[in-house]
Length: 157
Image (cartoon, rainbow, N blue to C red; front, side, top):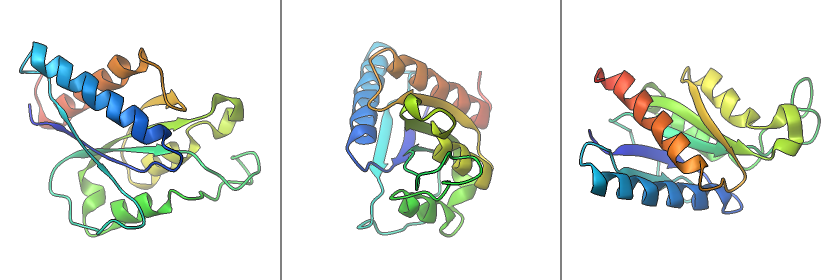
């Protein structure tokens, strides 16, 4: 299987840390079984050049909102907008095959709200979540969700 491609944005370093740990986990899985895909990850920021994506990819997005309760007010995303703009660029949205969200569970309904909104806006499934920087047990769970979704997309079992 081709490597799993991840595009992510990291504001405070939590998402970057999780993606780095997930990439290391994937490399270990690949070393044990060549059928297990590795991960290639690209951080999107205000300094990123937008390019046309040509392969399936996942996006990882934290939630930062403008106060409120995340349902009927306070749903203005903050600081992650450039990732949404990147996905909306050219035909990039058609290659997005899954969204992974993170956030703080203390925020109840707002937990992973940005990722859920991206999933709806770009018509891609919300496939996994983790809190803040994640914990080691999140790595196999999220990795397995990515692999399962990729197999679904490319038609392998």
